[in-house]
Structures are given as structure tokens and as C-alpha cells.
Length: 472
View 1 (cartoon, helix red, strand yellow):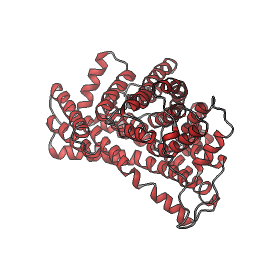
View 2 (view 1 turned 135 degrees about the vertical axis):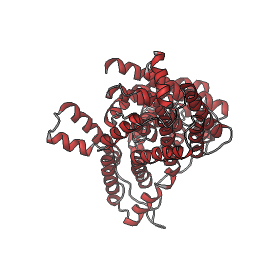
View 3 (view 1 turned 45 degrees about the vertical axis):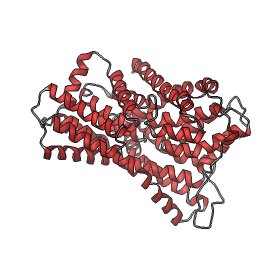
View 4 (view 1 turned 60 degrees about the vertical axis):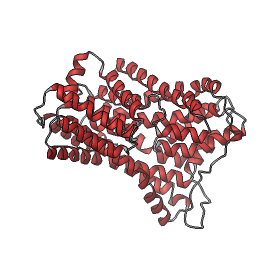
């Protein structure tokens, strides 16, 4: 159903007549003006990206000579379509992450995996922990959960902070950029009409070598550039919240239930992708697995399973579980609004004819669509500091020349854009300051550690995507 709706939406967008008779040069100027407005409002005026994207779409439509009423209609159409296709998934994913956090399930996973691990293996284990927790958790939440663990482990074993910190940060960042149900990949999938299961499979394939290189291997070098120890740092608490006021949780979920809760949607979507490849169309098992593997269904089932394993199963009351579910939604309001506004910006690109012109130029340039998508995302990431804004805008720009790409190439384009959106985080990125403060680093140390790590993830991710494209 989701695939059908996405296909219909793309068909309508591609076949809709342009809202303006402006020439190609004017449309290119409109695109540049719209993007410049977003960049300046976010970077210089310090506006929230939600407002910046609205104004950017208006500027683009105005320069393209689109009627004001048509600008509003185009933006609200894109806003609504993106909210319907992406918003539901982001909300369900946030619920799973909050249940994991409040139940102590994340601590169960961490305790199990680091128990009895040698110092030499610990960076690899930390990367694995971050990789698992990064599936349902937004990057900022993952940092809050993992940083106290990283500091405690480094202090207990008298290890360098960077040796265990970089692998953990790399695991969280890679999942954030490459693998649904994170907002960036979801937006790109929707904008390009890519298949969720294919993106998920390819995303995991690309994520593993990227994590190995940008995590434990890179950590050895970062440790030399930033010799930081945990002894001087305070350890923040990120344990489970009270089940009910005055009644702290005394029982945590086990390792198995916690892992099942957060990996269930991934397993269901992978099962769907395998069924579509191996079983004939119309086969009863394939139809059933396609239903279960529909992203919204898979995440909803995972929420229900999590409510049991991470709630009722450990003695939490109905009221406490409802409180956790409710508390998961306000923190993502800003993310949802940015994503939806990005959908409106993208629709303005399409309806004004800007996307078609850029697509024609891109096709004539001879650049690989994968490289072009990465370069566009890199430019916007450097300018705005937002990986989500970079993904949204890049996906909208390149969407006009993707109609001839097959399903595997569309999935790889999503990943190339995701890789570009992570390039060189610096002072205009909230994640930069989050890492700096948590690890007690100077600006220079943060650049030599976090910023370098993000750049390595971006470049290795692109190279992995290009290598995979040779075989698919």
C-alpha cells in the first residue's frame, strides 16, 4: 500500500505541469535563491530550520514567478504528503526508543555485551552496542544513553576516552544517516520512490565496513591526536525513569527481550525483501510477509511487542507505559516539522520546474547520479550543519532524473545522499557541540575527533556505495 501511494505521488508530481513559464536560467536562479535563503537563515540569522525551509520555498517560488496562491498550495501539498509517509514511521520509532530507555533495556544490552570483554576487544564491542541501539534511537538520545557508559568503562579500565568513544559515536552516526527508520533515510526513500526493504539491506551492507573503518580502526589514530582520559569527567546518569511516582523500577528486561524489541522491525522488513526476491508474485507466504514487512506495520508490531517486553513483562503499570509512550512524542515534534517543511520545499522544486532543469543539467554533466547526490548533500551539510536538511534538499534536487533508475540504483542513491549528509560536522551543527560538551573537549579537539570521524564515515560510505553499484 505504501509503495503504491508513493508511486502514485511520484507519477502525479512528474506529470503535473509547471506552475510557471519562466526560462531555465530563471529557474536555476530560483533554486539557488531558495537554497541560499535556507542556508543564510539557518547559519547566519540562527532561525529554526522549519521556518527557514518555509521562507526558502517562498523565495524560490517568487523568483520562479509562481503565483503566491500556487506557492502556498504546492508547499502545503508537499508538507502533507511527507507527514503522511514519514511522520508515522518516525513517531513509532520514537516510541520504541523511549520504551527501551525508560525500561532500562539499553542498560541490559550494554551490561551483557561488555561483561568480561578484554581491553583490546572493547572498541569493537562498543561499536556493536552503538550499532544495535542506533537502530531505534535518534542520535541525540543514543549519545545521552551511551556517553555515561563510555566514560564509566574508560575510567574502570583506565583506557583512552577516544578508543571507546569514537566507535560508539560512529555506530550511532552511521545508523542515523544510512538506515531507516531514521528521518533522513525515510525522507530520501519517499522523495526518490525507493524501496524500503532494498534500502535497509543495502544500508546494512554499507554500514558494516564503514563502521569498522570509521570506528575501531580510526579510533587508534584519533587517540593519538586527542589523548583524552575520563578521570576528569563527570559521569551523568541515564538510568530508567520511575515506573510510577515514588516507585522506581526494580526489574530490567533481559538482554534477549530488549534486543528482540528493537530489531523486530528490521527483521520483518528484511523478511519482506527476501520474500520479494525469492517467492513468486501471488504466493500466499510472500503476500503475508509483504504485509508484515510494510514499514508502518513492522514498526507498529514492534511497539506492541516492546510494550510487553519493556513494560508489562517487567511489572510496569498501564499508566507508566502510557506515560512513556506520551513522553516519546514531544521531543520529535521539531524533527517532524523540519522533515515536513522539507517535503514542502521539495514539492516547490518539482512544481516550479526547477527539479526538471537541474535534472537535465545533471544528466548532461556525465556525473554519476550517486556522486552527484553525494556532492549536493555535502554542500548543503557544510552550509547548514543539518544532516536532515541536507538529505531533504539533496533528495528533492536529484529526484527529477531518477525516473530511469531501477530499484537497486534508487536504494544506492538514498545511501549516497545519506553519506553526503554526514560530511564534516563543524560549529554550525548541534551534534558538534553535543559531543564537545559531553566529552569535555575543546573546539580544536572536537574537530580532530568528531569532525574527522564524520568525514571518514561520509567518504567511506560513498566508496562503499560505489563499490556495491558495480555488483547490482
